[in-house]
Image (tube, rainbow, N blue to C red; front, side):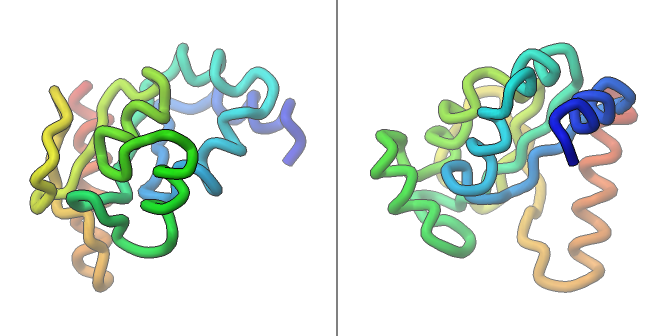
Length: 128
């Protein structure tokens, strides 16, 4: 999609969910696109942490966060997103505390858990 199409889609949305992806290699390149951060500032944004404690659920996010100068944790992810999320979601098992976060079971290990987590996210949107 071209940037104009992405911005139009964001404008037409009720909410934007930033999934539990690697903040450095997956999310930051998207957020650095022209006009994206200002567009998100005007939307209801939910971001899901890809960390439980100081370890990512999968992949090299921990090492990459550290290399980029962020703590490899939910608090580092929250900081990395620079105030964009209105709601920040952490896993129920995460010992790291992010002030005012919401906690759900974010480990989508099967279809049932994935559906339950999607319902949790939709409830946040419905109840805002």
